[in-house]
Image 1 (cartoon, rainbow, N blue to C red):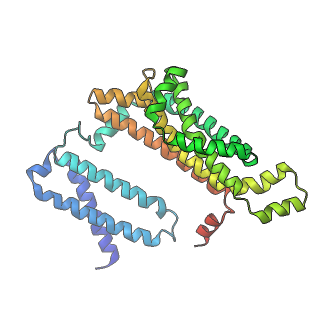
Image 2: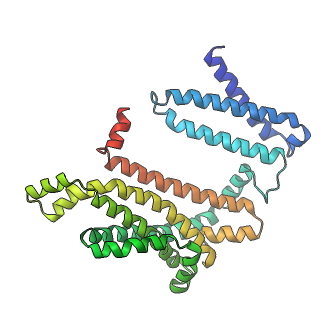
Image 3: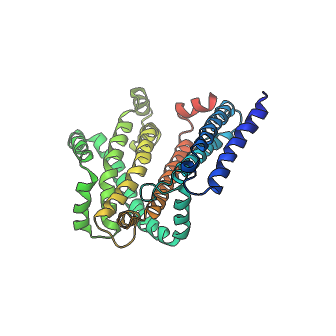
Amino acid sequence: MPNTFKNFIYTALILLQLFLVSSSDIGFYQSNPLLILLLIVSLYSMAKLLAKLTTIENQYTIVKPIIPSLFAFMLVLTWESIIKGYAVSPVLMPAPSNIFDAFINNIPMLWADFKQTYLKAVLAGYVIGCFSGFIVAQWAVKSKLLRDGLIPLGNFMSAIPIVGIAPIMVMWFGFDWQSKAAVIVIMTFFPMFINTLTGLQSTDALHKDLMHTYAAKKSQIFFKNQLPHALPFIFNALKLNSALALIGAIVAEFFGTPIVGMGFRISTEVGRMNMDLVWATIVVAGIAGSLSYGALALLERSLLFWHPSYRGGRSS
């Protein structure tokens, strides 16, 4: 059978499953159990299509974003099929279509929550925590006392759960976004400190000797030798902290916040059994975290084009 015809059959089966889910009544798998075979066949068809796309992704750049998009589409379609086909209670797990409706119908509320949690608490805490960790790491490179004192403290702080820090910060800084930013500062400081310190200490001895041979100034040694070597470590911390900051802010809002914020929305709507809106808020958080990580990854690629990992990736 020619590949083109096979691909047409695979696509038709997937579209048939999509039509079945969109046009059938709730509980259609319970009334006709054999329909589950169509879902299984459509999953097999998508796997075959994705396998074919992976063989040509290096030839066509447009294929790379298509692969995860199709994978996510099939995941959502399977989710919708199971929930709707077996009439699963929305309290246990809402269908993606219900989550989408909750998202569209509550955009002003979700936007207000996003501004409170992300644009205020997350950004402020992230910038302060990462910047202070970077500055202190520069001091620690020159001070063994500072290194020996802060590294064990970092290990100790990383073992403290957020639920232990958040109530204290709320008592110190109040119920508004400042207390959540303080939690984020504590969570992001030490990852940035440890990674930056490791990167600054990874400078090759031959490079140091060469800089001294040219009588380079301290600022020249830092910007032309130490900082380029430390950048991969710094970006690792930045990407790690982008996730930690959002998690810390949402969890901290469980312990006290104005009547706005993603953490407040999740805890409140769970109590009301309004799981559609809970999942819509989770989607907003996931999109914000993904965009933050993606922006940092693009910035890293643009600044570290000279690094062997990126040069090797382009040449392969």
